[in-house]
Image (cartoon, rainbow, N blue to C red):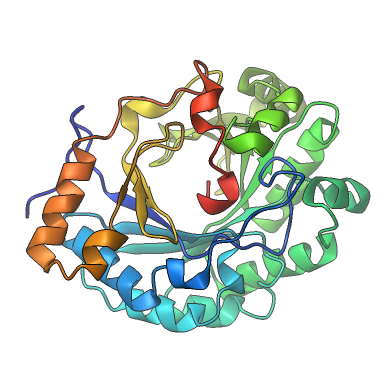
Length: 331
């Protein structure tokens, strides 16, 4: 098999697929205050088109796919789509990122259809703070969704907390206690300047080194580096004693994670985004809808990977990512 290798000898094995740019939440660091101009549904790839693209990627060595949004559970037909993907022989790991608002009623069916694990955004355990961050999100519904994912047997269930100084940083320790009590993994994430909303979110920036210092003070000698230290993604992991729960810190700004980047992103419109922190992208929808066969589409994908940059530019020129929104990229 000819694998996808970028100009810096990184093998691409991970594809994040945004199935929609729509979301039932309006997190202030993800969506601009004036709202979004939603794409026409005809602009979106159909699930059949997405399945074809993902199949081509698996034939090129990608074996890990994450479904994102927006919020993936708001798109109709998502369960059938998951079942289509689960049938792809080269796909070993199918996961989903969600805000969990709709997960309580869908977790069991999603797991049965093929979603092995979920990442869930949870920035606060205080209803008032949660509403402020999400612009009127329902914390109770999210907590029910987390419990449903755990009960369904998804493993691991990962909670993602974007830490914001002066807003939710007082809950760093409480979030760890909450995750540990439930057997869920937890990742603390620095704010990232993606889109207008994300750039505004950096006003609340708190570096990973401070977050980690708080965790070590809270847990003492119980918090130890996890075996392997770094996972397949950007987090550096720790664990609590010999237990299974892992705690990660993602330092997008203070200590970039680009050297081991093994991923690209497909937007709902069919654009292949080569780096979260740069604007460069390649349309795959054009090729799909102009009738290119599989070999020609694979050539387009390979040519795109040849353009993947070495690293993001979060610390250099935020204007280059100011026009894109995290809500359409899926993180």
